[in-house]
Image 1 (cartoon, rainbow, N blue to C red):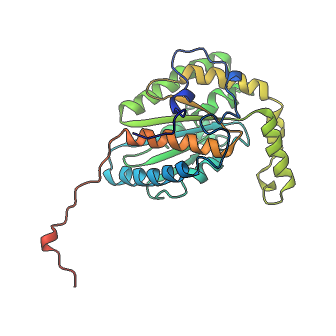
Image 2 (cartoon, one colour; image 1 turned 90 degrees about the vertical axis):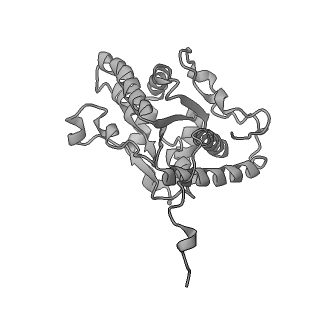
Length: 276
């Protein structure tokens, strides 16, 4: 399994099933295990990149397992950056990103999990949900688009959905990229000041920021209600991007190594092959 430096344990960032969650106690600036210094884990980051590329190639070639990575965060939380950084060397044939933006009319005409069902990974595939089915207990709750009775029962429906995926052979890893309000403000200001990043901004970004306390409450209850043995949540300190990427990479690599994958046997008889 993955060999991490002393003091670094990915399990400490997992929300344990059945525990009472206090989100304010999870420090978004935590980088323990590396002394808070980005330079120290450079070698480990390179090692993780190489392992992830190899393991993803095995996943695709073996064509047996399915892997679902769920990324949730507040605006500017780093979902796109995490995907770009961690999967930059992956084989595009076996990795797919599904974006969950505002539902279309067709999606609204079905149950809230319908569009998630359509995007789950096939055998040999690793799929990343950039936002996800959890929007139904976050955005829709905060904006009052569904009643309390509806979003509460959705916790059970989500757990049932993920249990079905797990029992069908899908490995599910869920990450909440945790930043604080001050870091979000800094990142929004950075986008305002950079012409190359201004296109990312919308009026909604600033309107949603005003609802920060409501979102934190919604996230806390959703994480607590839907972390399970078969689909755990990890709360990833994400004020420091280097640590965010390192931790997410380590969790994914550890999970892939646990699948004990092998390349399929060669089908060509070498004795019969003659290169001319």
